[in-house]
Length: 146
Figure 1 (cartoon, rainbow, N blue to C red):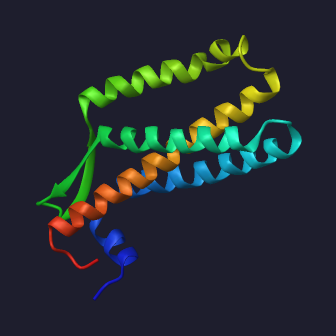
Figure 2 (figure 1 turned 90 degrees about the horizontal axis):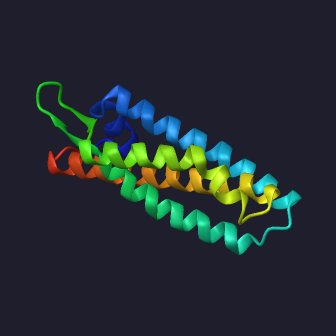
């Protein structure tokens, strides 16, 4: 019986696998930046944890924008972006690009970086976890060894 890692490598499309790795590594780097910013600023860590957890939830919802399914011809799990969630992604990107201007009047400048990086890293962790869950759900539906 294969372990989960071997099953993942064998039955997940390379593009999807690469996307998962990118989400993971970028989120690790961003979490490192958040921890560094926590040390040098006076922001309450509970605020950061709250933002991070809320962002994970949002990222988990965002992971649904990818339709992850089994490709019978290639015998792998593949994904494509759902049109409705593509629109949600576009709105999120616009919000992300204008976040500095939106937060500038309400938040001190030194906190904008930590809030932004916390939000983005949380969303990426949530997307990673949501996509991983869906991938293993598809593998399980195909009755492949996990």
